Length: 334
Image (cartoon, rainbow, N blue to C red; front, side, top):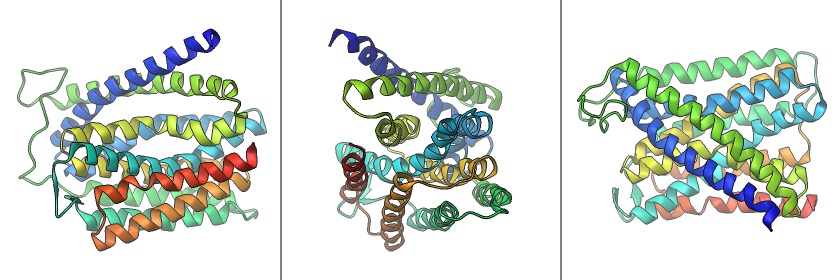
């Protein structure tokens, strides 16, 4: 037990650092969106999502483009499937739990006070792209690397659609900027600086968190492949999850859900483009299973958002999809 104690302490310290940096980040990025006259949803789907997903996309790029071994490239491919899985299951469940604990800002017996049309549209975009991503993962043909550009273009189209929306005059200004608490309206440069500083801390602390999980896995008797598929994706998506928790605590459910759906779009496109260009992009059984579970979860989200019928209790149950994934994977890899 003493040998694992430093690992546990580092794990907790890294998690605390990520949470504190996320508090700083969401405050800064809200002001960036406000100064750019972005709608609140675009702030979540584009600015916040791009900021927290960028470090992961860089790590994926380094793994697949600069990795010296097949194992390193496999890590990059795994990240491209593991991220959407965690976001489409665990992240939404955490939002449901946070809303259940908060118990306010809801209406009609627990229905979410959000734009169901926009959310279902986001899930629809994701499903089309993700299905294409999985189909390419079981096919081999010479022109496959060229299709990486199509995934980047898909994200560019989504980016353009989201950034064309403008802020509603009824949207309240964010809380005072932490770097300038006494100025009613901080400068765009200062808000951007605060966001970038927070991102640097999130990136560094996340790397420490992932490393400690990797060390904890063998102590728990888990093989490295199981750690890579089960624990590492949760660690890498922790900033997005914590952003959502913070926004729920502040009563900003729309921002919380927009951040998750925007991060899912990035994870479905940018890492996939890198994988198609720099690897054969052939998925093994564990990754195909991860993709199928992700599809099932997002299809359920799409149907519920489209009907406007989802509640906080329903969202909290989406963790069951991840438990099903973990149960089958654990049985196979153990």
